[in-house]
Amino acid sequence: MRPRITPYVFIAPATLLLVAFGVLPILVATFVSFTDMNLAGLGDWSRISFVGVDNYSQLFGDAAFWQAMRNTGLFAVFGVPSVIILSLAIALLLNRSGSRFFKALRSFYFVPAITAIVAVSLVWGYLYNTQFGLFNYLLSLVGVGPVQWLSDPTMVKFSVALVAVWRGTGLNIIIFLAALQGVPKEYLEAAELDGASAWRKTVSITIPLLRFAIFFVTITTVIAWLQFFDEPFVLTKGGPLGESTSISLFLFQTGFSASKFGYASAGSVVLFAIIAIITLVQLRARRTDVDY
Amino acid sequence: MSTTELAPAPPARRRTTPQVRTPKPRGRRLTVLVGAVLGVGALVTAFPFLWMVATSVKPRSESVAYPPQILPKEPTFEYFVQLFQDLDFGRYLVNTLIIVAISMVGLVFMAMAGYGFAKFSFRGREPLFFLVLVTMMIPVQVTMIPTYLILNGMKLTNTLVGVALPSLVTGFSVFLFRQFMTTIPTEILEAARMDGAGEARVFARIILPMSKPILAVQVVLTFIAGWNSFLWPLIIANDERYYTLSVGISLLNQQIASNPSLQMAAATLMVVPILVVFVAFQRFVVQGFALSGLK
Image (cartoon, rainbow over all chains, first blue to last red; front, side, top):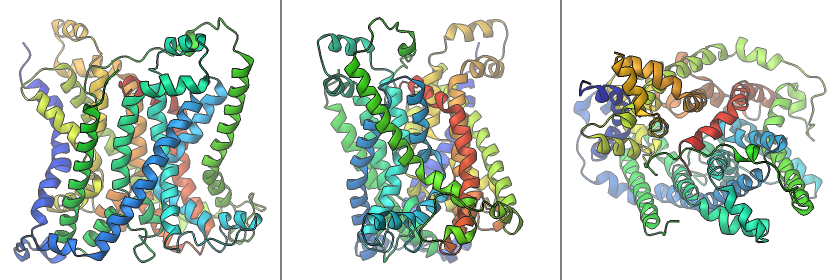
């Protein structure tokens, strides 16, 4: 007889860690968001006091918070479709042939996704540099004047988002390629016998069969852009004047640079609520969908 | 995300399907065109890396020269030497490797949990697995402040264990393990138990060897995640003795105008090992995602 405790022993370490660092923090954040916890309170808990919803009302009146929200919305509106369409298109093209050449090309598209953002940002920062950067030099060759990639308030949003799009496609291409292996060849061959063009086959057979992968990628991509952090943190620190500050970066800055833990926790709770609502709406939309 | 039974990926049909019909010339031409477009795209995508490696061996005078030159005229490795001699990159490298080693322990935990959820029925299995899936949706930036407070309460700030702990286990990996292990036939496990094998032995001698494809993916992904981890080292390690490569490199960022060569040398040091690991194991990664029933 197997002891009944066995399965619990197997799942315990991982589940406990997930609870400790996934679920518990949400509860802690909710609790801390009603206090005025700061660096002093961190050392001496008796110096923490309850402030009710002060943090929240202050947050909703904070221009920097709204600027970060607006920026995050802009990033998501630009980033999500770019990443999904690019990765789907590249995966479909890569899937066209199983030759060695096509297999070798895959790696090139994957690598931006797996390399360290700090290292990558240094490289992009150097490419964007206005004194000796390559991009402005290339533009000057075609007669375009220098662009203030990281210091122009509008341009900076595009510049940091471009790095994130470049980095964001790799993993999604892998997911789409894996899903493409599950598209039955028979369907495509049957359509070909009926004289369907490559475009027709892709639109009418392959893409509908990829629905689950597209759905999965959409959810994870939306979440990723709502959490947008690394690129602006390393490239611009959110500047100039907060023009590239995302909501995550705002939380980091108020939490760790300014040590306003209570205030930043209130922001965390708001961000979590936004992500949860958007994800639930997407899941609901999926449920009402017909299945093949 | 689907939690239903895994449908095993079909074998790579491309290779096994006999080429009965010769491809139509028009389709052939299109494939060549697609290949050319993808080739150009691949070069554009990889260009920042080529630029990084080229600049890392340029003397400073060449890396700040305008107009920029693609290839170094007088290649030098002095900046790699400088990273280890003048800066503390040797220590950062060791710390990073320790983080990677600790994450491998997390990998064992995740495999165990995947096995527990896949091959046992027990009270609370469904709600607990749902909990695991829910943690995938919780963004790290939401948890960073409370996690810092929790680790601070556990006196684990400024330790490498503290740096590794928050991301030691991910719901996504537990999910992938569970999906794969569901396909291992229960009869094999029952037979081993009949022969008197204990549960630990069944796991170590049957489950792990049979899970090699998914283990390969997870080892690669865990290595990459541990090596690249940035947010937790940044938050948890205030003392320079516990900096990882990523934190060390982000400090160099403040000198953006001063020495691109040194920065590109540091970036190369951090990126090239990952490229080697990934290119070597790439096919396992795609295959692993296919096996997890993600389609």
